Structure formats: structure tokens, C-alpha cells
Amino acid sequence: MSTSLVTGATAGIGHEFARQLAARGDDLVLVARDTARLEEVAADLRSAYGIEVEMLTADLTDPEQLGTVEARLSDRDRPVDLLVNNAGFGLKGGFLDNDIDTEQRQQDVLVRAVLRLSHAALGGMVERGRGGVINVSSVAAFLPRGTYSAAKAWVNSFSAWAHGEYADRGVKVMAMCPGFVKTEFHQRLGVDRDSSAPKALWLEADRVVRDALADFDRGRALSIPSKRYKGIVTATRLVPRPVLQRFQSMGRK
Image (tube, rainbow, N blue to C red):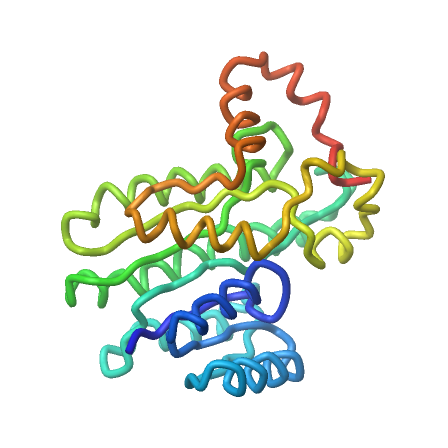
């Protein structure tokens, strides 16, 4: 029996990872800030799939609460076979529209938490010679979109390095780079989905996660869902950066 730990597990991509991993028969450790929603999701998954579900209420911007999740991942007596670093944090305004503490909290979730949780998980995985990490990044990593893009570019770079470093020791690491996905993420930012980006760019979470898990099973270091986003990423290597920067407000209106 395998155990998967998913952060940001009560909504959107994280919830879909939890559901699809449960359908595979994995026991789960679910991490999120809202205890009531955690309990609801855990009960649903236990009932639907007959698996064990452990809950950790944690705000990953808080070092002490982050440490609780690190400790769970480091527990050699209760090994975690797959870590999904999914917890998200987005800001609608531009860099100077946000106070620096808010910007720092975004980096705490998107970079520091990924760094520390990966470090906690990989030690035991390398010792056992098996396991994996999926880091939920973004197509934004390939685009000039401020500190969010910078954080996701770090996630991509770190994941690519870790994939090369640990693959021959039985541990897989992959960055997953979705584009616009129909979840609560943009709604929480106050973004109007219909007017902020073309309808053709919005993907369904179940398809995004299904494709990502298939890519992970194949041992790929990078997963970009759909031909349209693969094409966009290819185009970013050809289009001058100043031109790309004109589109940085897409998905934030």
C-alpha cells in the first residue's frame, strides 16, 4: 500500500490529485488550512475508495505549522511514497501594488514550502530507493509575470535538477506546469474567468491531473498539459521578451 501526501488538498488541482490517487488505492495525508473542509474531503474519500486518510491542518506560511508537515514527511516509521507540492498562492495586483509582507507570504508558499517539504521527503525516499515528488508549477514559469513567475521558474529549475540527481536512485521528481485551470484559484483572486483569458485556454482539473500522473508514471521530468500549452511554451522561446510582457495581465482581470 502506498501513501501520498498532498498539500492544498481541499480544492482544485490538489483535491483532484487526492481523488485520483485515492482511486488508485493510495492512502492519503491531506494538508490544508481549513479543518472543516479537510474533514469533509477526508470523509468523502474514505467512503468512496475505502482508504485511510490522515489530516494535517497547516498554514504553510507559518514556520511552526510547516514544520509539522516536514516532521510527517521525515517519519521513517510511516513513510510517504509520493509528495505532491500543490499548495498555491496568487496575487492579482502588480509587484508595487502589494505590500512586501504579502509578497513574502507568496514566496513562502511557492518556494520555501516546496524546498523544505521536498528536503524532508527526499531523504527517506532515497534511503528506501523508491518514491517521488510532483511539484505543481505553472506555464507562467516560462513567461515574464512578476514574482509569481519567478517563483514557479525556481520550482521548474529545482525539479529538473532533482530529477537528474535522484532518478538513478529510484526516486522520481517532476514539475507539472498547467495553464489556466477551472478551479477556485482565480475566483479567490477576484478574477473574472470569462473576461480574463480566452475560453480555449481554460482546462479541466481532472484532465490536467490525469495527464500529469501519466507523465509521472513514465518518468518524465516535466508535464505540460494539452497541445495548446505545449505550443505556448515552445512559442515563449521564440517570441521576444518585451512582446511576452505585454500579456502579463492575462488571467488577472
